[in-house]
Image 1 (cartoon, rainbow, N blue to C red):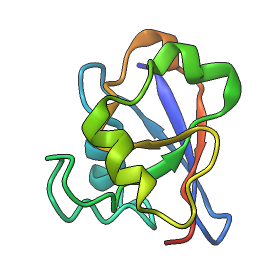
Image 2 (spheres, rainbow, N blue to C red):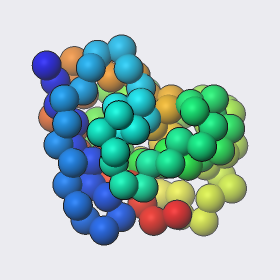
Image 3 (spheres, rainbow, N blue to C red):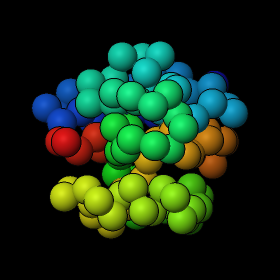
Image 4 (cartoon, rainbow, N blue to C red):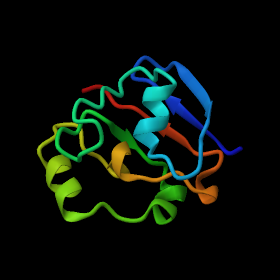
Length: 104
């Protein structure tokens, strides 16, 4: 099984088994990752699942679509690599990725 590591806003590391086909938000919630609130349940409506993708994985996750990008635009802490974890599906190419969960 592939794995992911989430780094919480308090720098706690969560290395978890990442089931293929599940969103990074679902994986984070299942593993109680601090900082991923997922208030809208994955409907791309709240941005409480904001993560930072490392540069070397950006091409593998693909670009944010228009709705996701619009939500991220309203955030004070948007940066290069900002994505909503509800919009990224786990696939083999993401195995070993380390994402940061920024402070909200």
